[in-house]
Image (cartoon, rainbow, N blue to C red; front, side, top):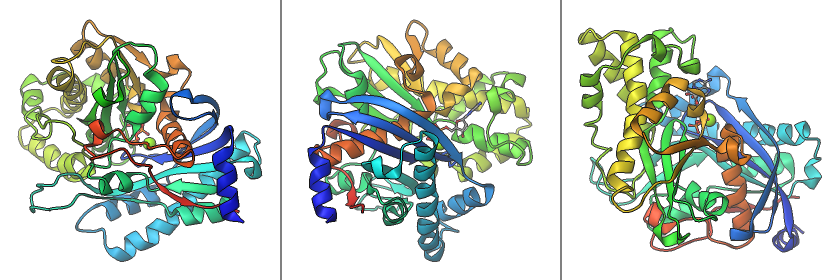
Length: 400
Ligand SMILES: Nc1ncnc2c1ncn2[C@@H]1O[C@H](COP(=O)(O)OP(=O)(O)O)[C@@H](O)[C@H]1O
Ligand SMILES: [Mg+2]
């Protein structure tokens, strides 16, 4: 019965898809309900609804604990996989309810899950020989609770094909923004920032994509420390706007070893998470650096690591006509201003200008990737992940 259902789903011309995503910020589950017609370059999307369902503090703490080498024990990860599965399922149920589409009319759920750990480098500190990644939020629970065919665990197939498993959004950027022959950098600023550069000739093999470095992650942690946990992020850049840029500190931050690494490259909490931020905070206190200057400067660091990465890895080969930004970082005006300063001469717009809400973009991406998988199309961009070949992504749990 379920397998017949899969064949029927593959044959459909258009599908109602729910994309579910929680990024490295661990702020909550983004859910996007979208009607997708066609597949590949003929994909047309109509976003019906979008919402972020924030994690309760207690869940956020559990994710941070599970993501940390010292505290992430197997029992905690085992349990959290199912706890998050339930929360992801709830997010799917709620977004369908919000848009008044019955679950019986949803064709697929595409769930990224929550990344707990990501080992992208083959030559890590411990001389690791294989890459690995772990996203949790058990898709069997999502399929069971919603009755909808669920596709999840997209990154592992790319790693199995020799890639880093990230970034995966480039294929979606190629579908959504790669059509009209403009040299575009599609820049997401979540916990980590990542870019897809689409060359003018629409050649998928020439796409340059990588994680630039930190997005909001260090800013979030500093905001939390400074306000004794009252704020989980620097709302509207208010804390940063009280400080001024410390050029020496900025230059020091820019010596981080991730930044000069050649793409393909990806990063995460392992490089710029709580450990990094807490060590930095301690160092800055010892140096008597004003706390607001510190937060202004780490905000500038995010913008500078983005602009420097263009200068080092894109601009030597291509002109950038336009930068299109998305993700939670678009809400921080101080960050936006630094970006404008560092990218002087390049037009910056927001994905919202293209009819896609900034905060919905990544969830939409996983809806589109799920649509590609059910259509039998590969969803990775080998030039972005370093994979040996294009592969169909994800694991499919048939619905009822
Ligand atoms: N009003 C705001 N002002 C400043 N930053 C914001 C605001 N709203 C969201 N953010 C930032 O966006 C982050 C969430 O962005 P998101 O794109 O969901 O990242 P991720 O994909 O890593 O979850 C928050 O942690 C915060 O840093
Ligand atoms: Mg998020």
